[in-house]
Image (tube, rainbow, N blue to C red; front, side):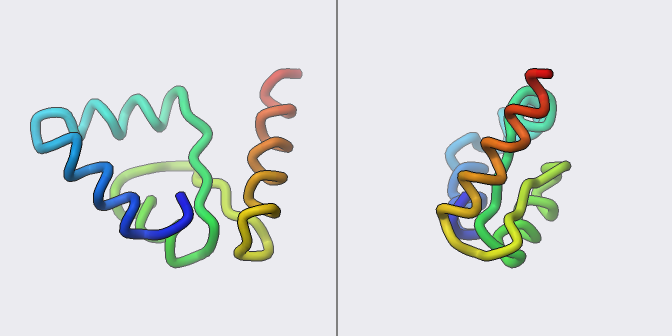
Length: 75
């Protein structure tokens, strides 16, 4: 995610009937990344766990952090 509003919009699109299933699926099968601490806080408030947040709140460091985590999972 690159902004906190994206988190809220995704959950709105899922709707109340699919929200919990979406959060569960994302926690089990998706690497969730947030570009900065405000965005990460929105993810965590929504129930997402293990949100990857780069040291510098920019897109390139976020992609690098996600790539590193993905590579570590493949080992």
